[in-house]
Amino acid sequence: MTPSPSTRDRAVIVGGGPAGLTAAYEAQRAEMEALVLEATSTVGGISQTATYQGYRFDIGGHRFFTKVREVEAMWKEVLGARFLRVKRLSRIHYRGRFFQYPLRPMNALRNLGVFTSAACVASCLWARGFPRRPERDFETWVSNRFGRRLFRIFFKTYTEKVWGIPCAQIQAEWAAQRIKGLSLGKAIFDALFRPRKKETSLIEEFDYPELGPGQMWEAVRDAVVAAGGEVRLETRVEEWRHDGRRVTSVLARAPEGMREFAGDHFLSSVPVRELIQGMRPRPPDAVLAAAERLRYRDFLVVCLIVDDENLFPDNWIYIHAPEVKVGRIQNFKNWSARMVPDPKRTCLGMEYFCFEGDALWTEKDARLVALAREEIGRLGLADPAKVVDGAVVRMPKAYPVYDEGYREALDTVRQWLARFENLQLVGRNGLHRYNNQDHSMLTAMLAIRNARGEKHDLWEVNTEQEYHEEGVARNRLAPERVR
Image 1 (cartoon, rainbow, N blue to C red):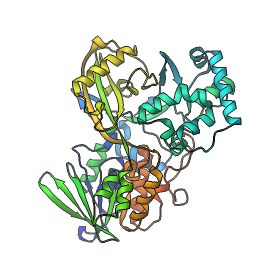
Image 2: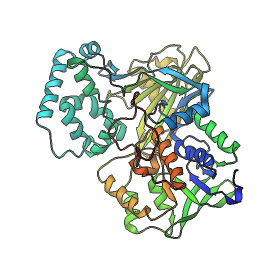
Image 3: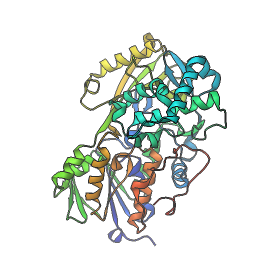
Image 4: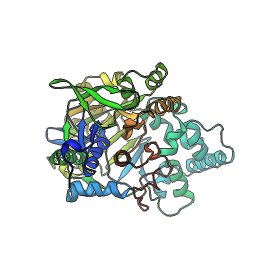
Protein backbone atom coordinates (compact mmCIF):
# COMPACT_ATOMS: atom_id res chain seq x y z
CA MET A 1 0.00 0.00 0.00
CA THR A 2 1.37 3.42 -0.98
CA PRO A 3 1.70 5.79 1.99
CA SER A 4 -0.44 8.91 1.94
CA PRO A 5 1.34 12.16 0.94
CA SER A 6 1.25 13.39 4.54
CA THR A 7 3.29 10.43 5.81
CA ARG A 8 5.82 10.07 3.00
CA ASP A 9 9.33 11.46 3.33
CA ARG A 10 10.01 14.36 1.03
CA ALA A 11 13.24 14.59 -0.99
CA VAL A 12 14.14 18.10 -2.09
CA ILE A 13 16.58 17.79 -4.99
CA VAL A 14 18.46 20.86 -6.19
CA GLY A 15 19.56 20.59 -9.82
CA GLY A 16 17.71 19.06 -12.78
CA GLY A 17 20.58 17.33 -14.56
CA PRO A 18 21.14 13.56 -14.84
CA ALA A 19 21.91 13.18 -11.11
CA GLY A 20 19.00 15.27 -9.89
CA LEU A 21 16.39 13.71 -12.16
CA THR A 22 17.65 10.20 -11.45
CA ALA A 23 17.35 10.94 -7.73
CA ALA A 24 13.74 12.06 -8.22
CA TYR A 25 12.94 8.96 -10.29
CA GLU A 26 14.48 6.66 -7.69
CA ALA A 27 12.87 8.54 -4.78
CA GLN A 28 9.42 7.87 -6.19
CA ARG A 29 10.23 4.20 -6.64
CA ALA A 30 11.18 4.23 -2.95
CA GLU A 31 7.74 5.75 -2.15
CA MET A 32 9.11 9.18 -1.31
CA GLU A 33 7.84 12.55 -2.48
CA ALA A 34 10.16 14.14 -5.02
CA LEU A 35 10.67 17.85 -5.64
CA VAL A 36 13.29 19.01 -8.17
CA LEU A 37 14.37 22.66 -8.23
CA GLU A 38 16.19 23.64 -11.42
CA ALA A 39 17.61 27.15 -11.88
CA THR A 40 17.37 27.24 -15.68
CA SER A 41 14.49 26.76 -18.09
CA THR A 42 15.75 23.36 -19.34
CA VAL A 43 16.36 19.97 -17.73
CA GLY A 44 19.39 17.81 -18.45
CA GLY A 45 22.24 20.12 -17.46
CA ILE A 46 25.22 19.52 -19.72
CA SER A 47 23.34 16.47 -21.10
CA GLN A 48 20.54 18.58 -22.56
CA THR A 49 19.85 18.80 -26.29
CA ALA A 50 19.62 22.32 -27.69
CA THR A 51 17.56 23.20 -30.76
CA TYR A 52 17.95 25.87 -33.41
CA GLN A 53 15.81 26.17 -36.54
CA GLY A 54 14.80 22.54 -36.11
CA TYR A 55 18.40 21.34 -35.79
CA ARG A 56 19.27 19.50 -32.60
CA PHE A 57 22.71 19.44 -31.02
CA ASP A 58 24.37 18.28 -27.81
CA ILE A 59 26.30 20.41 -25.37
CA GLY A 60 29.19 18.11 -26.21
CA GLY A 61 28.57 14.57 -27.38
CA HIS A 62 26.92 12.16 -24.94
CA ARG A 63 27.21 8.46 -25.55
CA PHE A 64 25.16 6.12 -23.39
CA PHE A 65 27.37 3.36 -21.98
CA THR A 66 27.82 1.95 -18.50
CA LYS A 67 29.06 -0.97 -16.45
CA VAL A 68 26.22 -0.56 -13.93
CA ARG A 69 23.21 -2.77 -14.68
CA GLU A 70 20.75 -0.59 -12.80
CA VAL A 71 21.76 2.50 -14.74
CA GLU A 72 21.38 0.69 -18.04
CA ALA A 73 18.03 -0.73 -16.91
CA MET A 74 16.75 2.76 -16.13
CA TRP A 75 17.79 4.05 -19.54
CA LYS A 76 15.97 1.21 -21.28
CA GLU A 77 12.96 1.49 -18.99
CA VAL A 78 12.52 5.17 -19.79
CA LEU A 79 13.29 5.28 -23.54
CA GLY A 80 13.19 1.66 -24.71
CA ALA A 81 13.09 1.42 -28.50
CA ARG A 82 13.87 5.12 -28.90
CA PHE A 83 17.55 4.28 -28.39
CA LEU A 84 19.67 3.85 -31.50
CA ARG A 85 22.75 1.65 -31.74
CA VAL A 86 25.46 3.88 -33.21
CA LYS A 87 28.81 2.84 -34.63
CA ARG A 88 31.64 4.88 -33.19
CA LEU A 89 34.16 6.64 -35.41
CA SER A 90 36.41 9.28 -33.88
CA ARG A 91 39.74 10.63 -35.03
CA ILE A 92 42.44 13.02 -33.90
CA HIS A 93 43.45 15.94 -36.09
CA TYR A 94 47.14 16.72 -35.66
CA ARG A 95 49.51 18.57 -38.04
CA GLY A 96 47.02 18.36 -40.86
CA ARG A 97 46.64 14.59 -40.56
CA PHE A 98 43.99 12.34 -39.09
CA PHE A 99 44.84 9.57 -36.64
CA GLN A 100 42.29 6.81 -36.16
CA TYR A 101 41.20 6.61 -32.55
CA PRO A 102 41.81 3.93 -31.35
CA LEU A 103 44.93 3.77 -33.49
CA ARG A 104 45.55 1.39 -36.36
CA PRO A 105 49.18 0.41 -37.01
CA MET A 106 49.48 1.41 -40.68
CA ASN A 107 47.58 4.65 -40.14
CA ALA A 108 49.89 5.63 -37.28
CA LEU A 109 53.03 4.65 -39.24
CA ARG A 110 51.94 6.62 -42.27
CA ASN A 111 51.10 9.75 -40.25
CA LEU A 112 53.95 9.79 -37.75
CA GLY A 113 56.58 8.12 -39.85
CA VAL A 114 58.79 5.22 -38.82
CA PHE A 115 61.53 7.40 -37.33
CA THR A 116 59.16 9.52 -35.23
CA SER A 117 57.36 6.40 -34.04
CA ALA A 118 60.67 4.78 -33.08
CA ALA A 119 61.73 7.96 -31.27
CA CYS A 120 58.44 7.94 -29.34
CA VAL A 121 59.00 4.35 -28.24
CA ALA A 122 62.55 5.14 -27.18
CA SER A 123 61.26 8.09 -25.16
CA CYS A 124 58.66 5.83 -23.55
CA LEU A 125 61.25 3.21 -22.61
CA TRP A 126 63.50 5.87 -21.12
CA ALA A 127 60.62 7.24 -19.06
CA ARG A 128 59.75 3.78 -17.76
CA GLY A 129 63.35 3.20 -16.73
CA PHE A 130 63.96 6.66 -15.27
CA PRO A 131 60.61 8.07 -14.09
CA ARG A 132 60.37 11.59 -12.70
CA ARG A 133 59.45 12.06 -9.06
CA PRO A 134 57.33 13.20 -7.33
CA GLU A 135 54.40 12.26 -9.58
CA ARG A 136 51.88 14.91 -8.59
CA ASP A 137 50.82 16.60 -11.82
CA PHE A 138 49.37 15.62 -15.19
CA GLU A 139 52.55 16.34 -17.14
CA THR A 140 54.68 14.10 -14.93
CA TRP A 141 52.06 11.34 -14.78
CA VAL A 142 51.74 11.14 -18.58
CA SER A 143 55.45 11.56 -19.26
CA ASN A 144 56.35 8.76 -16.85
CA ARG A 145 54.07 6.31 -18.64
CA PHE A 146 54.38 7.32 -22.28
CA GLY A 147 57.50 9.47 -22.57
CA ARG A 148 58.09 13.18 -22.98
CA ARG A 149 57.90 13.00 -26.75
CA LEU A 150 54.38 11.55 -26.85
CA PHE A 151 53.33 13.94 -24.10
CA ARG A 152 54.36 16.92 -26.24
CA ILE A 153 52.83 15.52 -29.43
CA PHE A 154 49.47 14.25 -28.26
CA PHE A 155 48.71 15.45 -24.74
CA LYS A 156 50.06 18.92 -24.04
CA THR A 157 48.28 21.05 -26.67
CA TYR A 158 44.84 19.46 -26.41
CA THR A 159 44.86 19.20 -22.60
CA GLU A 160 45.85 22.83 -22.14
CA LYS A 161 43.24 23.85 -24.69
CA VAL A 162 40.59 22.03 -22.67
CA TRP A 163 41.63 23.22 -19.20
CA GLY A 164 43.18 26.61 -19.88
CA ILE A 165 46.08 26.02 -17.47
CA PRO A 166 49.54 24.43 -17.89
CA CYS A 167 49.65 20.64 -17.63
CA ALA A 168 52.03 20.99 -14.68
CA GLN A 169 49.16 22.61 -12.72
CA ILE A 170 46.65 19.81 -13.41
CA GLN A 171 46.71 17.15 -10.72
CA ALA A 172 47.78 13.59 -11.53
CA GLU A 173 44.52 12.38 -9.96
CA TRP A 174 42.62 13.55 -13.03
CA ALA A 175 44.96 11.69 -15.37
CA ALA A 176 44.67 8.48 -13.36
CA GLN A 177 40.85 8.73 -13.43
CA ARG A 178 40.34 9.62 -17.08
CA ILE A 179 43.23 8.39 -19.20
CA LYS A 180 43.86 4.78 -18.26
CA GLY A 181 42.96 2.55 -21.21
CA LEU A 182 42.34 5.58 -23.43
CA SER A 183 45.85 6.94 -23.82
CA LEU A 184 46.92 7.66 -27.35
CA GLY A 185 50.52 7.13 -26.33
CA LYS A 186 49.81 3.63 -25.08
CA ALA A 187 47.76 2.95 -28.20
CA ILE A 188 50.68 3.96 -30.45
CA PHE A 189 53.08 1.76 -28.53
CA ASP A 190 50.76 -1.25 -28.60
CA ALA A 191 49.55 -0.74 -32.16
CA LEU A 192 53.03 -0.46 -33.62
CA PHE A 193 55.19 -2.69 -31.46
CA ARG A 194 53.09 -4.92 -29.24
CA PRO A 195 49.90 -5.98 -31.05
CA ARG A 196 47.34 -7.56 -28.77
CA LYS A 197 43.62 -7.79 -28.28
CA LYS A 198 41.64 -4.60 -28.68
CA GLU A 199 41.19 -2.42 -25.60
CA THR A 200 37.71 -3.12 -24.29
CA SER A 201 37.46 0.48 -23.06
CA LEU A 202 37.54 1.88 -26.60
CA ILE A 203 34.05 0.67 -27.46
CA GLU A 204 33.09 0.70 -31.12
CA GLU A 205 29.33 1.04 -30.60
CA PHE A 206 27.16 2.91 -28.15
CA ASP A 207 23.51 3.69 -27.47
CA TYR A 208 22.09 7.12 -28.27
CA PRO A 209 18.56 8.55 -28.04
CA GLU A 210 17.19 9.21 -31.52
CA LEU A 211 16.59 12.89 -30.65
CA GLY A 212 19.71 13.40 -28.55
CA PRO A 213 20.45 12.98 -24.82
CA GLY A 214 17.97 15.67 -23.85
CA GLN A 215 15.21 13.30 -24.95
CA MET A 216 16.19 11.00 -22.09
CA TRP A 217 16.04 13.67 -19.42
CA GLU A 218 12.85 15.22 -20.73
CA ALA A 219 11.30 11.73 -20.55
CA VAL A 220 12.53 11.26 -16.96
CA ARG A 221 11.07 14.66 -16.03
CA ASP A 222 7.73 13.64 -17.54
CA ALA A 223 7.80 10.32 -15.68
CA VAL A 224 8.51 12.06 -12.36
CA VAL A 225 5.62 14.48 -12.89
CA ALA A 226 3.27 11.71 -14.04
CA ALA A 227 3.99 9.83 -10.80
CA GLY A 228 3.04 12.84 -8.69
CA GLY A 229 6.43 14.52 -8.31
CA GLU A 230 7.23 18.13 -9.09
CA VAL A 231 9.95 19.58 -11.31
CA ARG A 232 10.13 23.35 -10.96
CA LEU A 233 12.14 25.21 -13.61
CA GLU A 234 13.60 28.73 -13.31
CA THR A 235 13.75 28.20 -9.55
CA ARG A 236 17.21 29.09 -8.25
CA VAL A 237 18.08 28.07 -4.69
CA GLU A 238 19.83 30.95 -2.92
CA GLU A 239 19.86 29.77 0.70
CA TRP A 240 20.19 26.42 2.46
CA ARG A 241 18.75 26.83 5.96
CA HIS A 242 20.00 24.52 8.68
CA ASP A 243 20.20 24.07 12.46
CA GLY A 244 23.81 22.87 12.52
CA ARG A 245 22.86 19.22 12.22
CA ARG A 246 20.12 19.05 9.60
CA VAL A 247 19.06 21.11 6.61
CA THR A 248 15.53 22.29 7.32
CA SER A 249 14.58 24.10 4.10
CA VAL A 250 15.87 25.93 1.04
CA LEU A 251 14.95 29.45 -0.07
CA ALA A 252 14.63 29.84 -3.84
CA ARG A 253 13.97 32.64 -6.28
CA ALA A 254 11.07 31.46 -8.45
CA PRO A 255 9.07 33.19 -11.22
CA GLU A 256 6.38 34.08 -8.67
CA GLY A 257 8.91 35.42 -6.14
CA MET A 258 10.89 33.99 -3.23
CA ARG A 259 9.71 30.57 -2.05
CA GLU A 260 10.75 28.38 0.84
CA PHE A 261 10.71 24.60 0.44
CA ALA A 262 10.97 22.26 3.44
CA GLY A 263 11.86 18.58 3.27
CA ASP A 264 13.16 15.50 5.05
CA HIS A 265 16.09 14.76 2.74
CA PHE A 266 18.10 17.22 0.66
CA LEU A 267 20.25 16.37 -2.35
CA SER A 268 22.49 18.87 -4.10
CA SER A 269 23.99 18.56 -7.59
CA VAL A 270 24.88 22.26 -7.82
CA PRO A 271 28.54 23.35 -7.71
CA VAL A 272 30.02 22.84 -4.25
CA ARG A 273 31.08 26.46 -4.14
CA GLU A 274 27.50 27.67 -4.61
CA LEU A 275 26.20 25.28 -1.97
CA ILE A 276 28.69 26.49 0.65
CA GLN A 277 28.09 30.14 -0.16
CA GLY A 278 24.34 29.63 0.29
CA MET A 279 24.43 27.91 3.70
CA ARG A 280 22.60 29.81 6.47
CA PRO A 281 23.93 30.19 9.12
CA ARG A 282 27.14 30.78 7.16
CA PRO A 283 30.03 28.32 7.46
CA PRO A 284 33.31 29.31 9.11
CA ASP A 285 35.57 31.63 7.12
CA ALA A 286 38.04 28.81 6.46
CA VAL A 287 35.32 26.70 4.81
CA LEU A 288 34.11 29.63 2.72
CA ALA A 289 37.67 30.31 1.60
CA ALA A 290 38.19 26.65 0.69
CA ALA A 291 35.00 26.63 -1.40
CA GLU A 292 36.10 29.78 -3.18
CA ARG A 293 39.29 27.98 -4.26
CA LEU A 294 37.30 25.39 -6.23
CA ARG A 295 37.41 26.34 -9.91
CA TYR A 296 35.38 25.33 -12.95
CA ARG A 297 36.04 25.26 -16.68
CA ASP A 298 33.24 26.63 -18.81
CA PHE A 299 32.21 25.61 -22.29
CA LEU A 300 30.43 26.90 -25.36
CA VAL A 301 29.34 25.19 -28.54
CA VAL A 302 28.85 26.89 -31.88
CA CYS A 303 26.30 25.05 -34.00
CA LEU A 304 27.06 25.42 -37.71
CA ILE A 305 24.50 24.49 -40.35
CA VAL A 306 26.35 23.51 -43.52
CA ASP A 307 24.76 23.16 -46.94
CA ASP A 308 26.54 19.89 -47.63
CA GLU A 309 25.12 16.40 -47.32
CA ASN A 310 28.30 14.52 -46.34
CA LEU A 311 31.28 16.26 -44.77
CA PHE A 312 33.17 13.55 -42.90
CA PRO A 313 32.21 10.17 -41.43
CA ASP A 314 33.25 10.76 -37.80
CA ASN A 315 30.90 11.15 -34.86
CA TRP A 316 33.47 13.58 -33.47
CA ILE A 317 37.04 14.74 -34.09
CA TYR A 318 39.56 15.84 -31.46
CA ILE A 319 41.40 18.93 -32.64
CA HIS A 320 44.97 18.89 -31.35
CA ALA A 321 46.05 21.55 -33.84
CA PRO A 322 47.33 24.52 -31.79
CA GLU A 323 46.67 27.04 -34.56
CA VAL A 324 42.89 26.96 -33.95
CA LYS A 325 40.89 27.52 -30.78
CA VAL A 326 38.26 24.82 -31.35
CA GLY A 327 38.90 21.72 -29.23
CA ARG A 328 36.46 19.16 -30.59
CA ILE A 329 33.99 18.96 -33.46
CA GLN A 330 30.78 16.93 -33.37
CA ASN A 331 28.93 15.80 -36.50
CA PHE A 332 25.43 15.26 -35.12
CA LYS A 333 24.05 13.79 -38.32
CA ASN A 334 26.40 10.86 -37.70
CA TRP A 335 24.97 10.37 -34.21
CA SER A 336 21.36 10.32 -35.39
CA ALA A 337 19.90 11.34 -38.73
CA ARG A 338 16.92 12.78 -36.86
CA MET A 339 19.11 15.49 -35.35
CA VAL A 340 19.10 17.18 -38.78
CA PRO A 341 15.72 18.06 -40.35
CA ASP A 342 17.14 18.55 -43.87
CA PRO A 343 19.01 15.44 -45.09
CA LYS A 344 20.88 17.55 -47.63
CA ARG A 345 22.54 19.54 -44.86
CA THR A 346 24.87 18.83 -41.94
CA CYS A 347 24.88 20.16 -38.37
CA LEU A 348 28.29 20.56 -36.70
CA GLY A 349 29.03 21.33 -33.07
CA MET A 350 32.25 23.37 -32.75
CA GLU A 351 33.29 23.09 -29.09
CA TYR A 352 35.30 25.78 -27.33
CA PHE A 353 36.62 25.59 -23.76
CA CYS A 354 36.85 28.83 -21.82
CA PHE A 355 36.39 30.55 -18.47
CA GLU A 356 33.19 32.44 -17.75
CA GLY A 357 33.89 36.12 -18.30
CA ASP A 358 36.96 35.73 -20.55
CA ALA A 359 37.23 37.09 -24.08
CA LEU A 360 35.85 33.96 -25.74
CA TRP A 361 32.92 33.62 -23.32
CA THR A 362 31.86 37.27 -23.68
CA GLU A 363 32.33 37.48 -27.45
CA LYS A 364 29.20 38.29 -29.44
CA ASP A 365 27.43 35.31 -30.96
CA ALA A 366 27.89 36.59 -34.51
CA ARG A 367 31.65 36.84 -34.00
CA LEU A 368 31.77 33.32 -32.55
CA VAL A 369 29.88 31.93 -35.55
CA ALA A 370 32.33 33.74 -37.83
CA LEU A 371 35.26 32.27 -35.88
CA ALA A 372 33.85 28.75 -36.13
CA ARG A 373 33.19 29.19 -39.85
CA GLU A 374 36.77 30.35 -40.42
CA GLU A 375 38.29 27.53 -38.37
CA ILE A 376 36.28 24.75 -40.01
CA GLY A 377 37.63 26.01 -43.32
CA ARG A 378 41.20 26.27 -42.05
CA LEU A 379 41.03 22.65 -40.90
CA GLY A 380 39.78 21.59 -44.32
CA LEU A 381 36.67 19.93 -42.94
CA ALA A 382 34.04 22.07 -44.68
CA ASP A 383 33.80 24.90 -47.18
CA PRO A 384 33.15 28.10 -45.17
CA ALA A 385 31.05 29.44 -48.04
CA LYS A 386 28.57 26.60 -47.44
CA VAL A 387 27.92 27.57 -43.79
CA VAL A 388 24.42 29.01 -44.04
CA ASP A 389 23.61 29.67 -40.37
CA GLY A 390 24.84 29.24 -36.83
CA ALA A 391 23.95 29.53 -33.16
CA VAL A 392 25.79 29.61 -29.83
CA VAL A 393 25.02 27.90 -26.52
CA ARG A 394 27.07 28.62 -23.38
CA MET A 395 27.36 26.17 -20.49
CA PRO A 396 28.87 27.54 -17.26
CA LYS A 397 30.73 25.26 -14.86
CA ALA A 398 30.83 22.34 -17.27
CA TYR A 399 33.98 20.78 -15.84
CA PRO A 400 35.33 20.83 -12.26
CA VAL A 401 39.02 21.72 -12.37
CA TYR A 402 41.61 19.45 -10.73
CA ASP A 403 44.20 22.15 -10.17
CA GLU A 404 46.88 22.52 -7.52
CA GLY A 405 45.29 22.83 -4.09
CA TYR A 406 41.81 21.66 -5.12
CA ARG A 407 42.03 18.43 -3.09
CA GLU A 408 42.92 20.21 0.14
CA ALA A 409 40.11 22.71 -0.43
CA LEU A 410 37.58 19.97 -1.21
CA ASP A 411 38.60 17.98 1.87
CA THR A 412 37.99 21.05 4.05
CA VAL A 413 34.51 21.46 2.58
CA ARG A 414 33.70 17.76 2.91
CA GLN A 415 34.73 17.68 6.55
CA TRP A 416 32.40 20.56 7.39
CA LEU A 417 29.47 19.17 5.39
CA ALA A 418 29.74 15.76 7.07
CA ARG A 419 27.84 17.12 10.08
CA PHE A 420 24.56 17.31 8.13
CA GLU A 421 22.77 13.98 8.41
CA ASN A 422 20.12 14.69 5.77
CA LEU A 423 22.23 16.45 3.09
CA GLN A 424 23.92 14.49 0.31
CA LEU A 425 25.96 15.71 -2.64
CA VAL A 426 25.53 13.99 -6.02
CA GLY A 427 26.62 14.37 -9.62
CA ARG A 428 29.58 15.97 -11.34
CA ASN A 429 29.44 19.43 -9.80
CA GLY A 430 27.90 18.27 -6.55
CA LEU A 431 30.96 16.13 -5.83
CA HIS A 432 33.42 18.27 -7.83
CA ARG A 433 34.40 15.17 -9.78
CA TYR A 434 34.73 14.73 -13.54
CA ASN A 435 32.08 11.99 -13.80
CA ASN A 436 30.27 10.84 -16.89
CA GLN A 437 26.49 10.77 -16.67
CA ASP A 438 26.31 7.09 -15.69
CA HIS A 439 28.40 7.70 -12.57
CA SER A 440 26.43 10.85 -11.80
CA MET A 441 23.29 8.71 -11.97
CA LEU A 442 24.88 6.08 -9.75
CA THR A 443 25.60 8.64 -7.02
CA ALA A 444 21.94 9.65 -7.13
CA MET A 445 20.72 6.05 -6.89
CA LEU A 446 22.95 5.40 -3.91
CA ALA A 447 21.90 8.66 -2.25
CA ILE A 448 18.27 7.56 -2.29
CA ARG A 449 19.28 4.20 -0.82
CA ASN A 450 21.12 6.09 1.91
CA ALA A 451 17.96 8.07 2.61
CA ARG A 452 16.23 4.74 3.17
CA GLY A 453 18.85 3.58 5.69
CA GLU A 454 21.66 2.03 3.67
CA LYS A 455 25.29 3.13 3.97
CA HIS A 456 27.09 4.11 0.76
CA ASP A 457 30.00 6.50 0.44
CA LEU A 458 29.14 8.64 -2.59
CA TRP A 459 32.64 10.09 -2.69
CA GLU A 460 34.00 6.64 -3.57
CA VAL A 461 32.00 6.31 -6.79
CA ASN A 462 34.32 6.40 -9.83
CA THR A 463 37.55 6.53 -7.82
CA GLU A 464 38.83 3.27 -9.27
CA GLN A 465 41.46 3.73 -11.96
CA GLU A 466 39.73 1.29 -14.28
CA TYR A 467 38.08 3.45 -16.93
CA HIS A 468 34.32 3.41 -17.04
CA GLU A 469 33.82 2.66 -20.73
CA GLU A 470 34.70 -1.01 -20.37
CA GLY A 471 32.28 -3.00 -22.43
CA VAL A 472 32.76 -6.49 -20.98
CA ALA A 473 32.58 -6.46 -17.20
CA ARG A 474 29.36 -5.15 -15.77
CA ASN A 475 28.94 -4.19 -12.14
CA ARG A 476 25.77 -4.42 -10.16
CA LEU A 477 24.85 -1.61 -7.85
CA ALA A 478 25.41 -3.36 -4.57
CA PRO A 479 26.72 -2.40 -1.11
CA GLU A 480 29.74 -4.69 -1.40
CA ARG A 481 30.80 -3.11 -4.70
CA VAL A 482 30.28 0.56 -3.88
CA ARG A 483 31.20 1.55 -0.38
